[in-house]
Image (tube, rainbow, N blue to C red; front, side, top):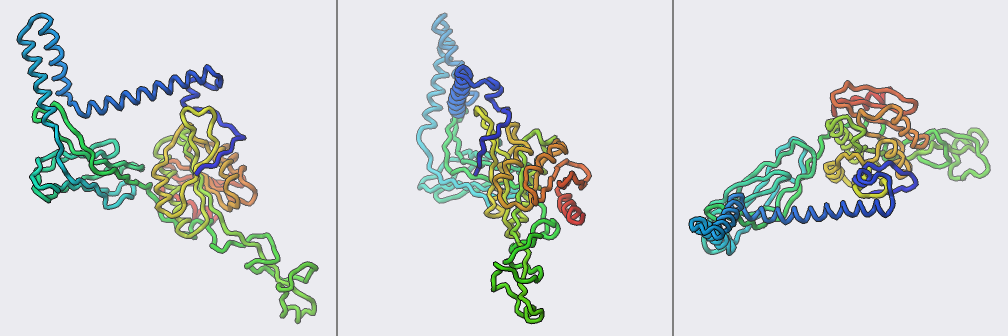
Length: 447
């Protein structure tokens, strides 16, 4: 979910800006249209080429070249041997085509014991090939695309109702959403000139969650009771009793404290401290300009997941937002935030598994401005960023929130010594490792 605010513009750094800069006329639109059309046409050509190259192997392309050149030179110069070689190559290609005709019937299934793992965990997958027909099926090669890689194994010939299974391991060294499949069987002629792929099973997504750390409720010092935490604002009706005072015109009779009235001889009424249900806001910057290294960004994602997961586990009101990313060919910068799911811990970590940094994403000050306008009733706000953010930018970010909101900046500086400092009303926690988050929050509470 995104909420767009158009009254503030951010300097464009997307593909359109790199092509035509800030120009916004018909000529600029024509140039952008030409570039986009060229990109679409090139994508279509590349798709067709990938399909063709998936059928014809490198040896097959060599055989096509031999057939064309041999027939061309053979008939042009009357070279009989070349003509024979050319037609032999053509015959081999035809035999390979006939060999791939028809279709073997398989039942191929793809399964994952768990479709959600943490970075570094073992993630096995299994492919089963079964022969549902009456006759024995010849062996076939099975391929399973795994992200950018490919898992391959050979299935032997199968008798009726016979099943063969194989297990592969999905790499989980990096956070992300890894597409697995669809499973395809590959048949090739004996020489290896042509190959035929048949897609069987649907693709699955493996969510590689960021690593999180358990944060005890009291160690944060920020998340309050579900019923609300008393404030210094006094009210005539609430649940947190404060004191007794004399009756004033307009007070509700149900708040009269009769025992104290009997003792003092004048009407005494109860006075309460106003309670508010705490609203926790976690804002994650996705701008590459806010981080010095990729390790800092991954640490920031893990810190966001840790804070959000703890609040969700405690049934608190929590909002987790991230910078919006401007599309490549947009005319104007997208000044908005992306709201991540907080229905449960798994959904939040699923969304965090898919976030990526970008140069066109909002930086911390703009992110804080939109987040402050969108999240009404916020009591505590965490701004998650990297070491490339200056103290002045953090101070400007904290001023976007109204008075009474406790703003904490979590600066992720991979390998740095954890520290706590105050910048006016802003608390700045610097963490070098994820384990520093719990200690830094406890230190902040004690301070």
